[in-house]
Length: 84
Image 1: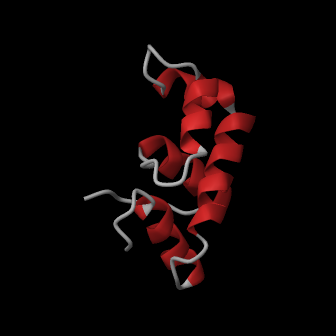
Image 2: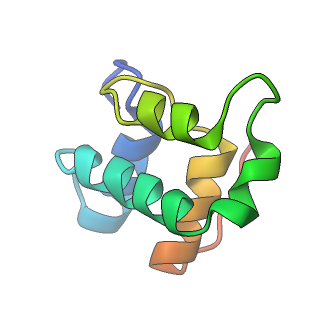
């Protein structure tokens, strides 16, 4: 995966599409799902940041995705995941 901060989204694109080119699509899908299900995700946002700030930061290319985004993508695309 490209080492540019988009690796989570690149890896999901690679597994679901066969290549990492559509990583921006998966970033946006995660953001949209988190935004539509704010009550489910808000408790996992750091205390000093609002969910709106978090989503605004996640819109930026190269911002690392993590557990929250992986959970959102697994819900949207109906897959299970294991992190080693």
